[in-house]
Image 1: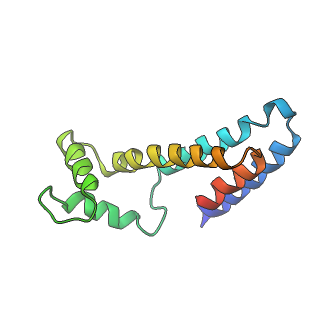
Image 2: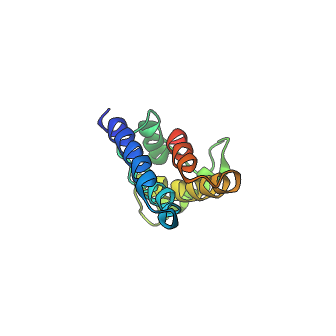
Length: 123
């Protein structure tokens, strides 16, 4: 619960800060918000209802299992070979997701306040 309250306070503070910034610096506020949220997504710890399930899958899945997402099997096998923990799995998924999200948001709107709100709603 503390995470979600902190997220709401951070987003509200970001919108207020974005409104107070001079126009030439407004474009950097969504990038800052995106970086902070990506950081939280990379190193999340017991956030979200699927967190425990991903740990179980990471520890038990094998490359010859029938699984609806074959890239997950390949990623987990790769991470196991290099003795990485499940936390690296979250990093491997978070970076491309946030990059695609950011490129999509920038394509559809140039308003920095709307960009911040869309990122917050997605998260």
